[in-house]
Length: 150
Image (cartoon, rainbow, N blue to C red; front, side, top):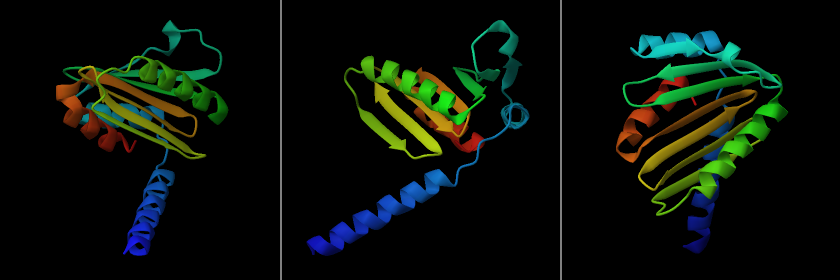
């Protein structure tokens, strides 16, 4: 029975990794099209920031929170930024209800519910998506993640 359970867990883990690795990064234009198509406002704020390696910085505005979409010049720089946001999220944890982290070569993903907030940061290749909202809006955040394929 233990071997069967272990085999099932290994298969599930492999499927989860495969699902994460098949995610594709989207362009800034696709981000805007998908967000606007769902009725959200989108603003290109790239020129408001002078950050080395940042190619594009878009803000999507839902009724209750912002969606940050950033394209970096390299996967390595995006991974470094993912790790920075991850550290901030993890350092601010208290009363954590849920925590999920996945890391592969192409995709990094962290979602957590803590201190009344639902936080998500996802990196696919050289793109980064960051959202931070009230925990009561978790389903809305998840819907945006699904809409964008992140």
